Image (tube, rainbow, N blue to C red; front, side, top):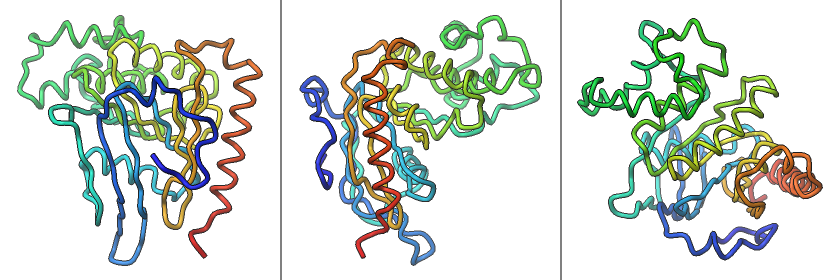
Length: 268
């Protein structure tokens, strides 16, 4: 994609060679007739990407996610999926679990909505729970789980259909730092296990650098991408990467880009 100022690091050729999954071109989104939430937003999402949308509150990160999910439509511009690849799941900020039923039945929900009986997909449900480390809690109820465990159930529910794309809207923002680090580690392992693409909304520079191979830095008023950072550190990423000089340097670059975004108030 073309962004003002260019990429902070040159994109690796292995990323550029991935087949396209989704393109957004010239997206504007207006709410209430006069609130310009997004202006001229363009990006290409490729298979296997882990893209973080990083920016201040009000820059349109969640709006961009809802557009990708088809929950709302653009005011202008185009969103195009590669034919046959528009299977996606969404993980919201809150786990939004049904308190009256079990963990397994919560994970079953997207399959149930497709008309698939529970017994038919029981193995898939248990496999998804195993990937998030909760296979022993299949018969537990949400009230018996910690906040981090509830979010794991939400992620398992998103994964059970094996979607091509998972959209995640600040899923770990309310969690303590230790739990957040653990879920970051687990998320990368889960992504590798089901071979999906992830778009991840976050306010955290540190989280975006650890998780992503591409970081889209967004500015507000109106929301748009003003910079892109490529993180070329190989996966799997471990605590060694999190404590490395490379990681610290990339965090500084992302932080600098974020500060520029926060100081960019439109085109005045």
